[in-house]
Length: 156
Image (tube, rainbow, N blue to C red):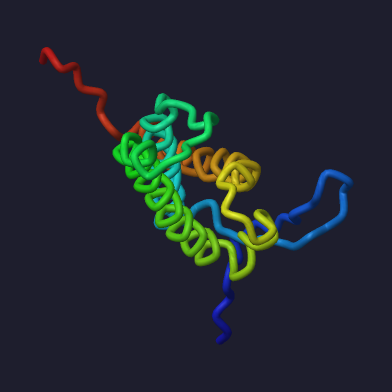
């Protein structure tokens, strides 16, 4: 007797603005572990955004700094900026590894073209998350609409 394997994977192409196919991803929208990882990636992106907002109010250094003393006067701000960018780099590296782990090695290279611009991953995340959410909703509805489950009033 043969074991029949059901494949629930969705295959989608990655295209540029002109419709040229750059690659392909494959994923199972019913995989809760992958959905959890994607949610963690979204959380990491929000942390990055928050960290960058912290330094967005720092004085613009467009004026020339002509001496070491002038640099020292702004050293605290430079350190905050450096910390924010280091945090950004660490988080993006983590996200790249996770995306490539989920969708296949090289996915981020296709999406980001060897840059670390996290915004370039937005189409990928926005494209797949609704499919994961839809599957989670279907699974939950199966239990919420089950007529064999007695509806209890909290006040009873």
